[in-house]
Amino acid sequence: MTTAEQPNGLWHRNIKAHQSDETSGRDGSCNNVQNEEELRQWQKHAQKVKKKILEQVHDQLSDLLEKALTESVQPVTQIQKKIPLNNIPSRSQRMDDGKVFMERPSLLDELFEINHIRTIYHMFIAVLLIFSLSTLAVDYIDQGRLVLEFDLLFFAFGKLGTATWAWFVMFVYTLLVPYFTLVIWGSLYHSFPSKLGLSLVTGLVLSAVQTCILGLFPIYVAVHYQLPPASRLIVILEQIRFLMKSYSFMRETAPVIMKNTAKEGESPRFPTFSSYLYFLFCPTLIYRESYPRNTHIRWKYVGITLGMILGCLFYGYFILVRLCVPVFRPENNQPLSKRSMVLAVFHSILPGIMIFLLCFFAFLHCWLNLFGELLCFADRMFYKDWWNSTSFANYYRTWNVVVHDWLYYYGYRDFLWLSNRKFRTAAMLSVFIVSAVVHEYALAIGFGFFYPVMFCLFALFGVMFNFAMNDKRQSPVFNVIMWACLFLGQGVQMCLYCQEWYAQIHCPRTGNSFWELVTPRSWSCSNQS
Image (cartoon, rainbow, N blue to C red; front, side, top):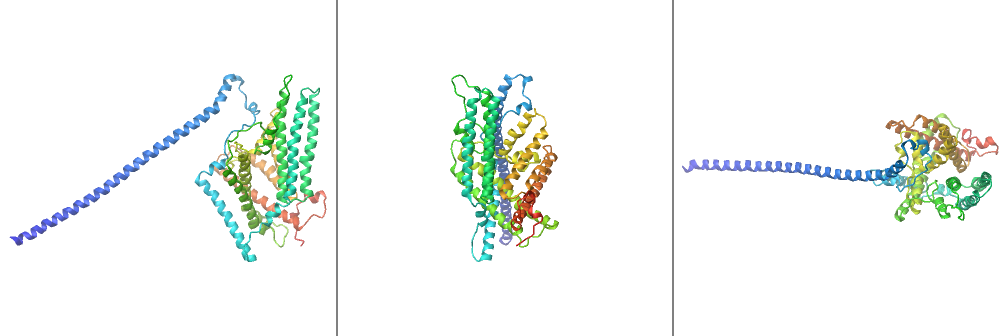
């Protein structure tokens, strides 16, 4: 019996062991199922929390937007209550309203708060470091030592003392002469027998003095003292800025003085000298007696912005030294051929577009924000999102808002006012021509030779593209076309100006006749050394 019971007991033990294994297996599978169920519940909970957070953010943004719209619409509704519906001003009548300044940051300052956009900024810094390392490597291979020689940079900004005293003369004149001319004219205007005669004489005298001090004097300094390119551009660009600012000051204040007659026993009210002095330095070309101001200066922001300006300066230097000088300063400067010209243009596209972006970032963002921060100037909309433009019309409006506002209010709008709001196309073309002439003038004086590449691209192709690619073009394809045109245009400018620069060195002019001055040397120059 015992022998029979042993296998039976073993069998029972095996059954129990097998059952225990099955039980543990079922427990494990149950645990896995339970874990998966908890994971699904957690995911559902996370989705609910995410949905609630998004709803809260959406509600807050909606409240902010509704509040902003309410504040912006409120004055309009108050005006509409006072004005009958049949007397609502038309679009042409609303053009008489001037620019409105408001507190707003620069667009890139907002975009740099996004990590994805800031990474692009970091990529440009990395490229600058690569340029520095490549220059060090080339210097070490050629000279056997590590050195960074900024000879081209020192040459470009040479004779900076002469440019400084020339700027100081222009500044003192712009500060004193237009302001006190306005005060004297305004004091006599309402009591003078012939208001038109007084205004004509004052305008002619001021125009003559402006032509001598702000017109001929900077050109004389640049040519007579043989200033290098960067110092010349400083003088010429400041000349243009002072002319535009003084015109805006007279244009905005003179009509107010003419309309407002002082009461008996009271002196006429004029703009304060401090407001005009502030206007000469603040980053806008439209005069106002007051602007929206910040409460304090962010000195950390000032330091970072100043560092970015210096970084852009060295960035441009490395681009010229590494990508342009080795190509356009050959030992044998042969006459142009179709093949060499096409290759040079396409080779110049990369340095051209990089210089283009650097000029935008260094001046329109860093330089203007630096002065805006130091002067607590709160309206920082110096540009808009021109890089998203699908039309050249929108690009011209958003690329440089500071200059566009001046051209619009004192060029385009005044032209329409003089023509009784007719000839809109002629007004637009006149603004294009004036802008193209001023751009070409600055480059001609800055480089020391006349080569109207900028004028042709701006006044001819720019006008053509402005009509062909207008605001009706909304497809992203036109944004690609716009960028392709910008790339090609910058390549053409970089190529032709660099070729002409070295042609002027290799083949200097033999006379000062008109055709010698206006004929590009690169068209027929071969190395004479």
